[in-house]
Length: 321
Ligand SMILES: Nc1nc2c(c(=O)[nH]1)N[C@H]1C(S)=C(S)[C@@H](COP(=O)(O)O)O[C@H]1N2
Ligand SMILES: [Mo]
Image (tube, rainbow, N blue to C red; front, side, top):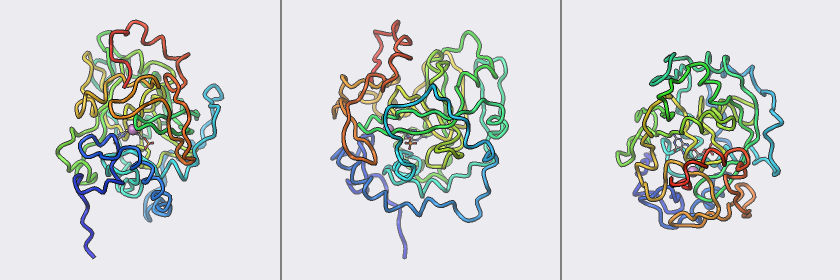
């Protein structure tokens, strides 16, 4: 039987998400329907036959850093691994199976721009050089849902110490792979591929800003953005760019994927704030993925004590979403 893959405009409403700015009709209802269906997709997650074992598997589980803990239960792995946002592999939350097509070895990361030691480094060499540890973080998507995830990774600061940014570097720009042959979503020309995100240099140097290599005590599954993705827990999830191939230290604020697509709804700073509504929905509460109830959203997603100072001289910027 011929199964034709659907284009964006053919997607059923149940598969569209609020971030899908061009096609969304029903917003959050669609996201919940997606979760119900996703629980049926579990077996598709099994490693494809013939995939080599991860060369860094011996590093996991990494030591948990008790300084980064949370007051709420972790999202079960089975739930988090079947509810992902990865537009390269489709606009629904059920992209885990499709994402298994991404080859994650060999993989190199190019680090360039305004640094003393630009380099292109093999991912396994990088991971073994960096101080990886496990941290429990709250994770909040702009679509008003949240999870709690045990990430393993290292602070971007450790990478900065390796490449030594120059004084003129004011921002860090991070870019996802771009290969439409592998990622069907990248064949849709109305998106500005590749996915790009960025941080101000002081945000990147903050200890909470993590480059993630593992999840749930193992090397990251592909749908989480293996083999290297960003996690900035005080910002909306779209800042946390996946499957990074290039990290550039630059003087100007980078043009980011969602801001380029729809600046009125998704800005550069994108800090979590329950008091500032998205143009199309409230951010006051969030759906707990896997449980289904709603809980209050916290300012800076609960990390205000650590990060609020980063913004005290930026009050004229659009800091929220
Ligand atoms: N390359 C890339 N990175 C991405 C995305 C994406 O579509 N492509 N989606 C973002 C969004 S909107 C969210 S909420 C998180 C989801 O991460 P998760 O699937 O690990 O929960 O990844 C972010 N990083
Ligand atoms: Mo998101």
